[in-house]
Amino acid sequence: MSTPFAAVLLAGGRSTRMKQDKALLHWHGQDLWQAQLHKLQSLDAERVLLSCRRDQPLFVSPDEGVEVIHDPVGVDDGPLGAITRCLERVQMPLLVLAVDMPWMTAAFLREHLVPVAEPVRGQFYRGPHGDEVLAGLYVPAMLPLMQAVLREKHLALQPVIEACVHSDLATTQMLGDDQMPFFHNVNTPHDLK
Image (cartoon, rainbow, N blue to C red; front, side, top):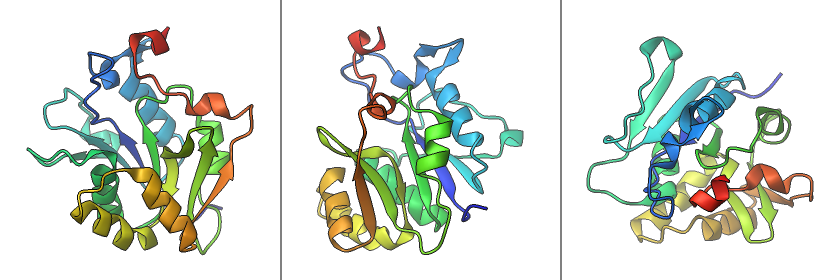
């Protein structure tokens, strides 16, 4: 029996290196954002959110039970801003998944990032390039630090996670070689191939 949690798909990135919206890439017969959202919906989260820009053509029907959180118009505060807004809204542990991690599986998320016991701390994995901040578990106790950093316009997430680990609000563990492929990003057309 898991602790109540929410899940959010981050789909609002600008996709500048891809030169087209990554959320709309074709992936196994559907748009990538739909495939990623279905993974989150399979986890039995209490709430499922879709974080995106207002101008993106990402539509969910009301009966899907997905809450759409639009980035504020004219504000470009990246994933930190999006995650902070969603965490403020749900006020419970929040499993975050980026739209551009198509090799992430629901099984990995369920086994490693769905909270199972109280108290819940943030949970992240560390790879060769540092903490994997766009597939992890954020918790409300992290909010004051996230909000403070956001006010200062420091938008990098890795230092936030490091500070949360230092303050015992989150933990990280090293990725095994067999786990690294789940965290691969699709940033360029070459990556997609």
